[in-house]
Length: 158
Image 1 (cartoon, rainbow, N blue to C red):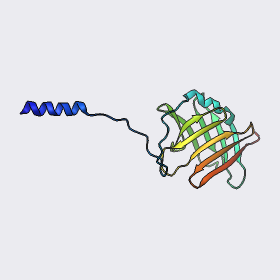
Image 2: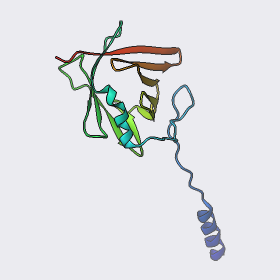
Image 3: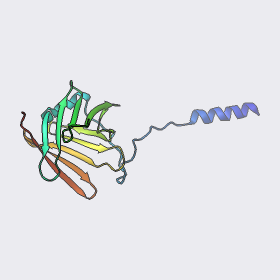
Image 4: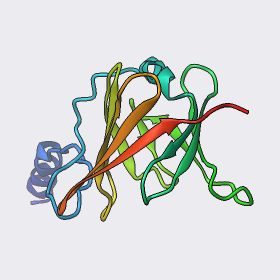
């Protein structure tokens, strides 16, 4: 009897299947961040065009400074409030970049003229940044209610 129970327990234990853990679902869309990341840590350098001081046009006033630190680190500083440390970093972890103060986006694409961010936390919109020449680029926030487009223009260096 003990031998039968032991063999039954052992066969159940050996037949257990361990499934990989999927990334969390994106709130409201049922999507998950892409596991098909096709860039490397060094591809962040494709975004060299972002280096410098940028400001939005229109109602939504934003002013951001993009600074590279080495080949695989990019810091984004919010220049609207000089009294606070409002920096976000591109952080390489588990074979992909994450972005945001709380790493709320995973980078799913890095090209020569664009970069795609997909949310990994609830209530965060996907977004795409697209270069338009040397002096401007667009941030498109992909919202359920429709895309919101922000135009950034390069600022003169003092």
